[in-house]
Image (cartoon, rainbow, N blue to C red; front, side, top):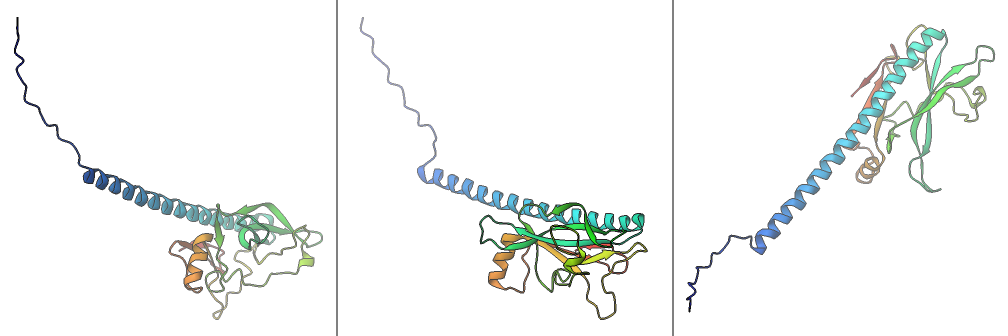
Length: 212
């Protein structure tokens, strides 16, 4: 028996054109770039905030330690190589508390060296980190340690610090920023700070540290 096949009407399914697919891919790529930049900025801000908080807490502890021990507690700043390689510059990236020996009077390290987070550094500028430009309290011969770096200032047992606090003296401060951001801003203008930074002001009268 012969059966006639009834032809069916072909249905056209909707689909993306090549141009539409390229536009979608371009938009996804753009969103990924924006997202990565946003995450990178957030991580940088977290690093600076974390380092600033640790420094502030350590200074508060140093002030309490001076009262408890009834002797001055010094603070010295240390350099190290942030980038690998023998030609990498030494940058300020750490600090350490120091106590004078009760017998000899020589300064000794107290506790471990505190390092800033990852590539965070102390901006070496007489304007934004003038405390780093200050002369040390004592000479290297007054330090009893393999690292002969003396303290820059100290907290007093009766309160306050050894930092000059006259009317003509500056506001003592130290600024943290990411090393790559500092290098980039220095190429444009050595006198300006990068967009992302943290400045800590040390009150010479009370020893309190305020974050700006």
